[in-house]
Image (cartoon, rainbow, N blue to C red):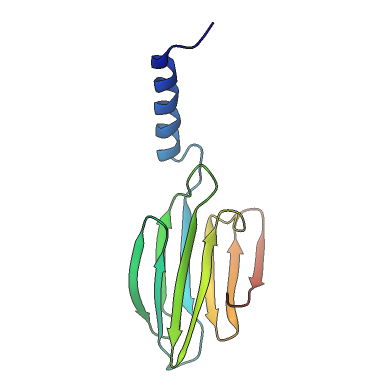
Length: 131
């Protein structure tokens, strides 16, 4: 017995609604802090394949925040250019493959960004080198 096209359509619609409602995929709260040094401004420009989050100028210890739901295919990627003084770097600030946090707090430092994860199951700090 073959399922009817209307059953397939209904199944796809239910999957989409569940995904958009956050039933299948958790919401991510992503924060990016300027942790360079006092008096140094950080300019960030973050994007994904679908969204351009704009250019933001952050004073020392200031932050930029974005909330989103990763796609249900596990391919969500946000990348940012980060510039201060005469220095410019790029970094993949969120990848579904690497990041499992729902509250992802990044401290941008001269030698690379550090992820401070503080979820129910773990509290950890992981520092990365620039891309």
